[in-house]
Image (tube, protein in one colour):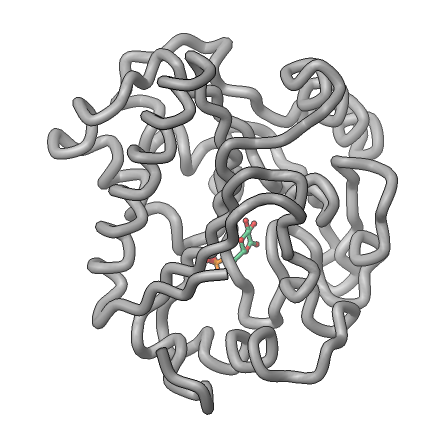
Length: 242
Ligand SMILES: O=C1O[C@H](COP(=O)(O)O)[C@@H](O)[C@H](O)[C@H]1O
């Protein structure tokens, strides 16, 4: 595991955008395609906008990039909470790509069927043996990642790759990659910044091992490479400094 610490969120995002395109270029050179699972929430929006900017648009062959979603809110695709809509507005709309390159969760199905359908979609893309070139993740203030929230059934899933989860407190469903699918990836990257993430980072890095309470501790790619892109504020509570 490598932790990359930057002074500001902007510097973290800039470095992650550079890593994204180098990872894409390496995969395209080797396999003629690049598979990436995007994260949702608020943190990655600026990353997607940067990737869509003139500086980065020309740095990889976007026609060879296949986009998936590490988690999705169970809402229609035009709903303001939709991770797809955020990525579309910030990134897809600015790239010269085809619709088939964007693998979205079918939220018109019921939650369990949507998860099964997305599981099939992922398995089909990888001929039954999913291993993404890159999975982008965020970290919630409560140490959740993707939609693997504390004290939910998703923490303990070890068979399925994609699963629905009901969040009792928010009264909503989400569809999420499971930890085994994420851990089968070649590269896994957390983008986390801001002082509001300092307690969650401290718990994940230096807290007791308790995946039920801190689900992000589940992330440990078997053969892949785990990296964190963080700012100084996010790691300000750690005893061990980088
Ligand atoms: O709910 C979500 O939150 C996490 C963290 O999001 P952030 O808004 O605090 O950056 C994110 O990884 C996940 O994809 C998202 O759906």
